[in-house]
Image 1 (tube, helix red, strand yellow):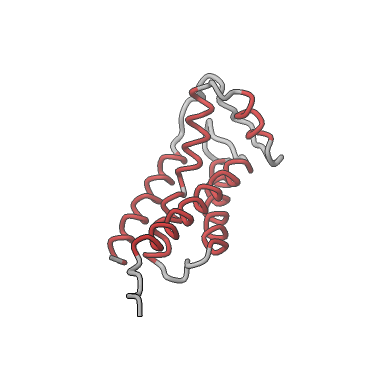
Image 2 (tube, one colour):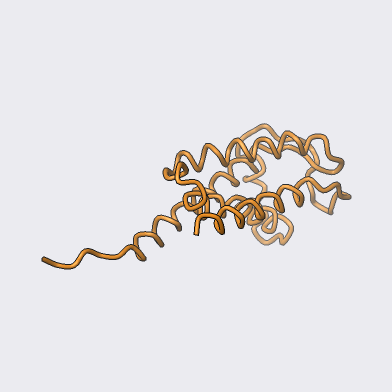
Length: 141
């Protein structure tokens, strides 16, 4: 199970990296300025809950690292704590955001890091719940 989880996780992370670093033309409503103010972009999401663009961006960032929390503890047993998942997610997401500063029509946004980390921690919570449900219960004495 561990090799399969590691393969799927690597595939997902590499695919996400490629997707987020592709150069593109800005879409209508797309912010291409860097944002280093926490919750600034999230406030824009909140004010535009009916916008398909903003919701796609929000949920895309949420799901980008969700598999890290879901598959990470299986692939790498050292990722057996939520804070370790959050730390790895923060480092990975920050690296992506810093690299995006070099890509045309992309920008760095601290809120993307916040949402990516939240997604990874949600994935870990799902992992913990599923593990608890699937774990064999001891027979009554």
